[in-house]
Amino acid sequence: MLASAATLAFLDDTATTCLFTDASDVGWAVIVTHTTSRCRSKTSSTN
Image (cartoon, rainbow, N blue to C red):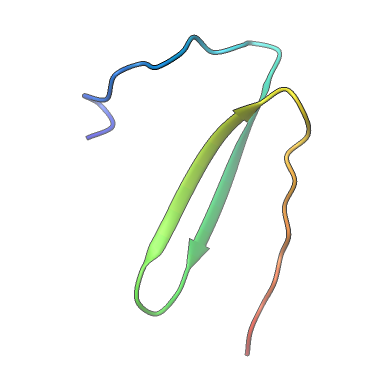
């Protein structure tokens, strides 16, 4: 799927690429962003 995805914009070599992940008992997600500001992350854990 990623190999056949269309390029929507040209990448900026000076921008930061951020990778965010999340997982649970029923699924998972991966989000990739490309930003000119800092990546902001919040970590949390549940017991």
